[in-house]
Each structure stands twice: as C-alpha cells, then as structure tokens.
Image (cartoon, rainbow, N blue to C red; front, side, top):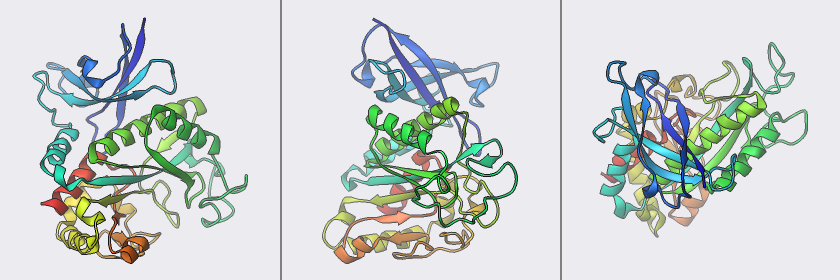
Length: 336
C-alpha cells in the first residue's frame, strides 16, 4: 500500500510569505499526525537558509484528507524547524502555540474572513483586458448573474474541496469588486483556525493551476475607487461569550487601542494602501471601535451589543496576513 502525503510549509519570503509543498510516499495509511516522520528541504531555495548550510526540517503538526488526490492520501501542515528541532526564525506558529498553552483557560475562538481576488493576467477575472468594468462596484457583492459574477466555478470547487478535506469552512460569497471573493474559516481555536486557513489557501492556489487563474492576496490589488481585500478576524474569549461579556469586550478594545503599532505589524504587508478611511475601512492613522460600525477598526456586532456578550470583529487585518501572527497578537494583547 502506498499513500501520498503532501507536506506543506510557509517559506521565508518577506514581507509576504508564500506556501511551498512536496510529496512524500508512505507505506501505510496515516491516522494521526504523530505517525508522520519529519522531513527535510533546501532552505536556501526558500530564503530560509544559506547554501553552505541549507537543510531545514519539516515538523508535521496537522493533517487532513487530500480532496484532490482522494483515497487515503493526505495534506500535512508543517512547522519549519532548524536541524536540531528548534523553531526556525520564520516559524510563527511556534509562538502562537506557546501563547495558546499559556492562556488555555481563556478558550479563545477565531473566525477568519479570507478575501481574495482572482486574476487573469494583470486584471481581475471578468474585467476587460485594459481599463475597468462598465459599472463601478456595487452590483457585485453577493451577486448572481453572468454580468455580475466571475470565477464562480473555481470558487465552488474550492469550497467543496475544503469541505471534503474536513476544514471548518463556514461560508463563501462574492465580494464588492468584480472577481473578488471571500470564504470564512471557523470558529475554531487559534492553532486550528490558522492551520486550516493556510491549508485552504494552499487548496485555492492549487486549483488555480487547473483553471489558469492566479490568486491575489494583495490588500489593494486595484488602485482607485475599488475595495481592497482584508481578512477580518472575529474573536472572542470565554469571558466575552458569557453573560456580562460586553464589558470584557470593551476592555479588550481599549487594550487594542493602546497597542496599535503591534497589531498593524502583525496584520499584513502594504495594508496602508487599504486602510485609508474609505471603502469600509478605518484609516491606519486612527483607532476606534463601535457597534455595527464597518468604518471602525473594531466592529462590535449588533447581536453582541443586544445580547450583552459575544465577540468582536477586528477589521484591520489584510488579506495577506499570517494568521499565526495575527491570532497571537490578539491573544497576547487582550489576555495579558
């Protein structure tokens, strides 16, 4: 019996890291991540090592079914480690794991809204070869109809693959700009939501190969009067979800307002192009929170306000953010 295990990891490119993967052939069916061996790769080809000392280690941390190859084949999320097994400098998951353990009693939950743009060459899918669509943004959000939608086949295929893999995909929708879409992952704990978001990104890139379409996670793929792409994070702790939790949420928002630079650094590259104060964003130079305010840094949902408990939505993270870093920043700021 032979099983294909696709080892997936995050490379060392900055300011926006990318995904890499390679296939390991195993002699048995794998039922837990503990059964998987570590593996090596050439870190000098991924900006994670010098050519004179190029070996880096892949440490399996999470597995799911491979919905593309099917059968007993699996996808494997890995941490990058040094040859001695210690976390590599590019390994952002290790720090989140430490924080998750430290604040386990808080029972932090995350739901991430991953926006992205499907690109055909240098233009979003569905756009003319040059210039802009005949109509400005407006008709495309959650739309239906061939004049309003581009890329639905690929988006639907991605959703089904994520579900077949066992990922906690909670929804998809067309976004404000033609060719722009969103899927949501969670609610899950910090490590689970981050591992699954990276796997979902890998699956989207992988089927983009089959469609000949490029997936763009830049927070402002088209300049001008068009919405950018974010990765809003819906976040709560156990005290926030319990009766009277609204006061805990307000305290968390005050803490977030005292740590603006820390969070902006963790929320993705080129985000200043998106956080302008327009197109449903708060300016990167400001911080405010409010009920039902999609122009705020932090939105407190209507139901949370009415119920007196629930969650907050951090609207600042960019579509290209590293979820390990973003989740770590939220836990560290609000739980410390």
